[in-house]
Image 1: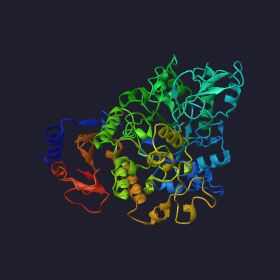
Image 2: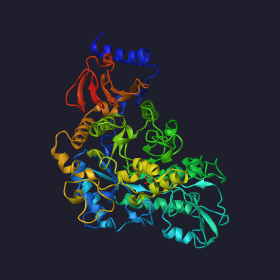
Image 3: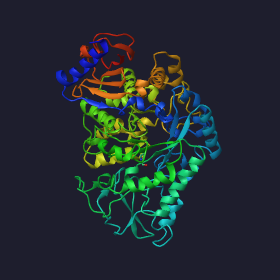
Length: 581
Ligand code: NOJ
């Protein structure tokens, strides 16, 4: 047996017979056949929360020109696209996810000229701009809603979801995702409207063809300006059930609207129309946010027979919420659950593509989320980066993740800007938790953890603004910022840059099949990527202890990358390694 076959045999044996009976194999049928990957499959996407990125006019709020100024920084990460969270006209109740004009730029962020300049400058660097489409709901200040709510018989009367009721009795017991009833009474119409999220975010009625046309026209407006794709918000909620009935009540008598309206049958008909009217025929990518689409249903949503190119499903980021995304009902999770979620998504997208992510503007910082208390946070940030760049799919980097950001911890609920944090705090208090207990969950899961301003350098306010930042800068900015990390060969930032280069130049990482080993192990995450006779293996020790790993698997393997400079024949706490065979 030659060395390569020996290793192959050893791997299979170890996975199948010696340790765990289950093994998973994922990848395109014939990796060699997938000879031309699309541009968005080859490079990572960098996500920007413009409000927190870089302020160029001193008002304490980041802006479009700030993004343009930092294009070379983003390019240094090898990114092929920038996903901007919403920059449209908005009252900013939910920081732009409440849109009052789908085709105009929020003056807080700049002008359409600034936007065109960004698209052109990014394109000169081979980077495309991706817009966020928020099409489940608009702002209650959108002219469409103002007209819709003005009477029961105006031309847009049916563009939102209206139901009868009396001021003291909403149509159903549905609870909005940010807390409180999902129904809001409207005096003018003497009716309720549905809002899956905040009161100020009324749900659009996708059953109305004129409304759908208006949304498609808005998306086409941005395509005409040269955008490279769309991230589509909260898409699972656009189709409502035929009958609106009470859901199984929680202890407070309400039922999350999510349980009643997510992924309602028939939704894919709307989405196929959306695809025909907007996406088809353009060299763009689409990635939709789809909490609750199960990995096994992914083939209906993504790829050739689906609608989108990629789907952000939530299984791996929601493992701590087995009872729904209520923060104070979160639970400790096992590593095997995290691994199972990641593997399930890899399997489900074997014929399509997967957006790999650990962070975004709605999630706490990942090193503290996925590693146990007491873990070295720099090692953890690097270990997650190794997974991000070696799974099969497009890595999504969220601003600050590449610097090894940690969670912010504000002492009082009044210090939090995020509408969802305040809603979750109220829920926890209504459930009997003390202020201290409720704050513990807010500090752990608040979306503001991801929204504190970027740290550019060690100057006041981390170089983010010359004014008063809209959200306090993290206290650790003097140790963790782009300038310092740029100059430090061993920084998290330079680790990301190297990994991005490694992925871009590795056919195995771009195209190889995924196989998980030892799925039940509660300390190690091990997977291989295989293309023809080439194989790479990622090994991550999620524990804070030294682990003797099954050396047989690694016989003859060469370490090519890792978060410790040297190599031992055991794994150190939080050690992550990429091996080559
Ligand atoms: C998901 C977005 O990511 C989040 O930030 C927003 O609050 C909700 N959708 C509502 O649009």
